Image (cartoon, rainbow, N blue to C red; front, side):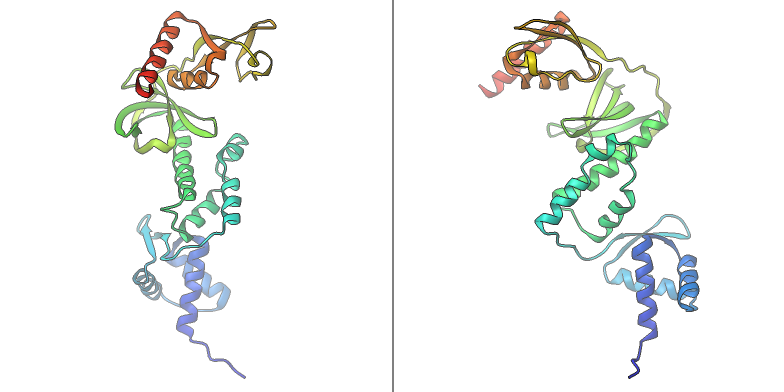
Length: 288
């Protein structure tokens, strides 16, 4: 039995399938695709009419230029099971593919998932957002141009001019390592706290210098402490481990030392010991 096919609906669905697969497209690309693969001849006016129909159905596009479109969002969600969500979280764990140097390997997949799903209220959306921010920042670091950055600092929006250097991972969190021109100090900015940023035409001018610190560890840490990159042992006895280390951001250093409680102490420099003492005293006043 012959089945009747609505040619208009069939052509429309082929166009929609092409757009879903490519995401970024030109009208001429769709016309060529239909002619070469299905022997269907249509005009650009027809494709534009199909796109207007898709927009009315809630599908969102943006114009990259006069000829190029980008599919931005579909009017439905994909409902992941807990198992599927766990697999996605594991797949997009930044620590794994960033350290391996494959920072852009998942770009196509992430872009497609972002179109097919609305993650606005889920933790996975935060991963996609962080990926996009990190991808931009990686390029900005390579450009070596200053950035005007707006970021959240304990609920307050801060605006600074910074010189980006590189992205680093500390405790599974990605930070932008930079020199804060406004505050005239080294800084590590959690990329999840970045609200918006803009590249300036001004070249980076400052040299990034990490600061020296001498630390002593006692108790179980004498034998269990694992040296980080660039750290070295100065002295080790049965009761004490003294190491030479370097830090970039003072606040990050202080937070790391606090994790070791009374088993870690700053020996040098003296001014850093005093700053850490005042930092701890402020915390006690807040929580006591």
